[in-house]
Amino acid sequence: MLGKTRRIAVMAEGSFTPLDAKTALGVIRYRPEEVVAVLDSVRAGRTCEDCVGIGGDIPVVSGLEEAAGYAPDTLLLGIAPQGGALPESWRRVVADALMRGWDVLSGLHVFLADDPELAELARAKGCTIHDVRRPPASRAIAARRVANTDALVVLTVGTDCNVGKMTTALEVHAELKSRGVRSAFVATGQTGIMISDQGAPIDAIPADFVAGVVEKLVLEAARDAELVIVEGQGAIHHPAYSGVTLALMHGACPEALILCHQAGRTHIKTFDAGPAPRLKSLSEIIRDNERAASWVRTAPVLALSLNTMSMDDLEAKRAIENAQQLTGLPTVDPVRFGPEAIATELMRRLDERKRRASNE
Image 1 (cartoon, one colour):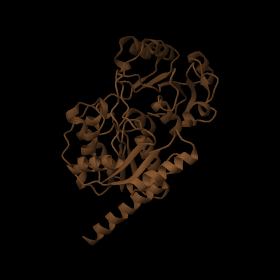
Image 2 (tube, helix red, strand yellow):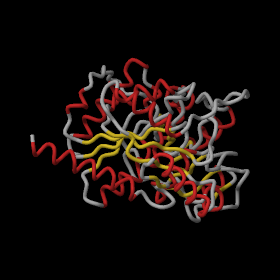
Image 3 (cartoon, one colour):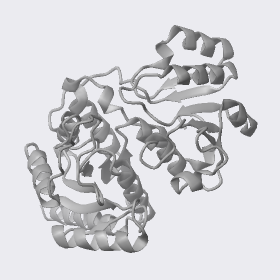
Image 4 (cartoon, one colour):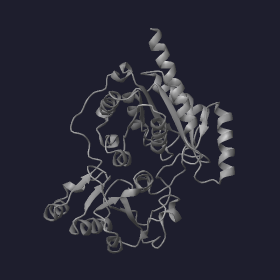
């Protein structure tokens, strides 16, 4: 991960749950061989499987001292507090890790390597602080260049934040590669970057340049791929994150969309104590995403990815059947039941493009 194979202790203090530890879960799901322990004193003594349903017998420990018994060389901050700042209690843990000579991987909006005390500790101990959310130095302006690429570009979009856009993209990408498709995954958030070792954190880029940075990422990925699947962020109806979603959509200039939704969720997830906005119907959300994408390129929603993690198998199957009937789209939970249906639909679209190109 990020330049070398690691032994990672993941910090998830007080929040190691499926909904609260997005970065931790992503790394455990897709880089499990590098995770040796998770720090959460509330759930210490259990395993990852017990707490979040993945990760097998990776232990959950009470703190850094206990984690040290598993010989880690890296501390990864696996949860992000609202606002992205470093809580004072975490600061002590980060400093302790650096004192032990461990690298630190952080996806916070605050850059730990710019903190004089922590930077000096890292220098003195010969370790590295990786601020994964640090934006790239180059800043480009988008100009719809992706529309001219030969690759089929697919973007995951959501009914809300935290519904499975990254996971869907990664699962479908892996399935396509297993079928011999030259597929590329473009990471646009800190967790995706940690998993794939490439990408850019678009929520840390000045607004004018988000679309341009995404465009550059997609064009680079398309050089060696026939299909590029881009990790989505936020949702166009979300009062906080619609801007980054729209910039990503127009920079990536996709030709197809996959809509991601958490089954049973009825209201947009916000961080305010007041009443949350109610989600629109799936048909309205599909319509609005297609309209927004069409301002730069026509991009139909080809499939629906349904996150059913809060349901048992029977409830999940009923939810999938219901969503498929309502939308008329291939629908599946790609983690629970596999991404085959979505991958098949994308391959069908890819074959159509190839046939059209050969007839021109």
